[in-house]
Amino acid sequence: MTEAVKPALPDCPRLSRLFRLQFEPVQQAWVLLYPEGMVQLNPSAAEILRRCDGQRPLDDIVLELQTLFAIDGIRPQVEALLQEGQRRGWID
View (tube, one colour):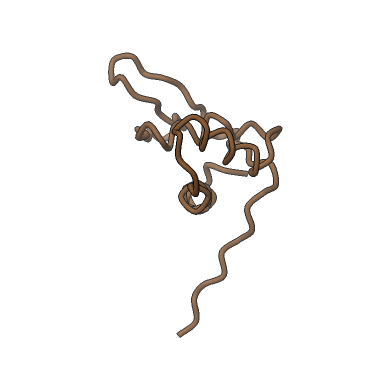
């Protein structure tokens, strides 16, 4: 059995225009809003997606997050979230 090939991540990930990222004070959480509903994000997912503006290279996003969280080696987790985001249509 072969593993499915994952699509390549964009050099500068961008949130799809179908989604809007915003902080919801009532829920005290960042959410992705879309016409059919809403996805509540955990804090690390929100920090990743907040940087997906189509301007920042993936390498810069990873370096910024490593500095923010004071931890090295988070690239696999960042890539995993972005790949899931691509699968769900969050990332262009």
